Image 1 (cartoon, rainbow, N blue to C red):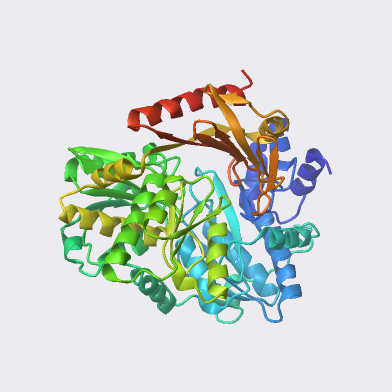
Image 2 (image 1 turned 135 degrees about the vertical axis):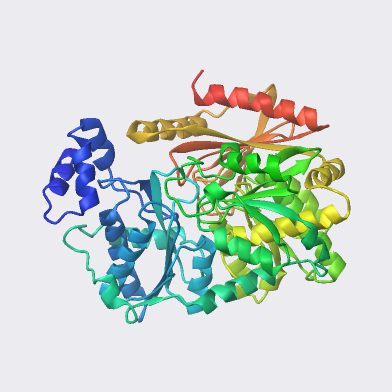
Length: 569
């Protein structure tokens, strides 16, 4: 069907959801808006669904959520004898509605549902899947996207986001569903205590115990002296992060008042991403008043954490790559000191994460694994270690986009875990008379001046998606030979699973993914990939210079050159 045909079919449905009906009226027969809302089905992949809220097949609403859930239910009933699903949701607009809609559909399909009675972080969903031995999990969130987005992420029985194979099987089931004719549903309240059960408080407590068990601090006296400002950015992290900090003795915690309570409109941080300085603006304002040692911010579903630290009266933001390196070094150092380092320690990072991690890992005798972008690939490696009885060998995993995890109790990045480690690390160094900036400079002097930066190019709508595809195709078919007066000596195409070094071709032993990596003769590199969750093309820049200034100069050159390539200049 064309976009107009789908639009007419939706608009003539009886008993249409009130909110969706209102959204139709707001379209006011605008052809451009109708096309964007209906030109395709909202894409389901390893990240589940994610899109703009509104009416239409290309929007997040009760019908697209319903269709996906019925497809998932059909897949589970065909794959498991007595399937069960855990559900969590964050503070976003309609998150609770979508979570309960999914629960109603699963219950009607005779699938046991365990749902949190209030908003909880994404890692708590992974924990619940593993705790109850569920067949799958669902979390309603759009992570750090702007307020107009929501999403629907699906997890496998291992507590990890679904693999590509499982996602394709679920998708094939979804494609057979008519969102108005085939979706079964039972009233939520009538199913409570039967097919739908609330996740109990003891499960939440077990989660906190598991996080606390990952602390590498034996003497927590230093924790009491740490002064922290925390902002959950109006998301799900407020109570969990405060609880874990209290459990480890960090009690001087002040909350940014405007961002303390759940608010899906994110009125004081339109882009609630702790990677972005604007999201931390209110926290930084409060820092000027209270003068804490550390500002901590978590995104709406509390799986990413960003920080700013006091340095000579100023508050310095530290990147995800830098925090990851600091944590890797700190965890290794403390484990060596405490005698808790396993015999064959393993750390894991994604291919777009700083190469500096390799130097740190080597220094401590830690095996460092590289995986594709997405924390699910880190979780997958933890699962493989667990299958070999070696899960205790895993000590830390991180990605440049502010995702961290120590321990195998969940299979996703965990900002509750990350916040605990960051605060304890800051407290420990404070007791030694150092800030994180001081320690970072020490690491740069020891391992080299690495500099990483992320470039984002937005491509909204159908036209934007086509343009993004064309750019990727152009980079494959006609790759640059020289960048910043440096020869491109290596090209890795993760979609074709091949690496080209001069005329030599070799196989890349990782799952296929639409990612291109270019290495320059100088040792600098950049990775290009379309975002899996936003209409963006992402380019990850990496440089290692003779000093900080040299590294910055390399990055600046790469930014100019790659902007020209993307914009076709």
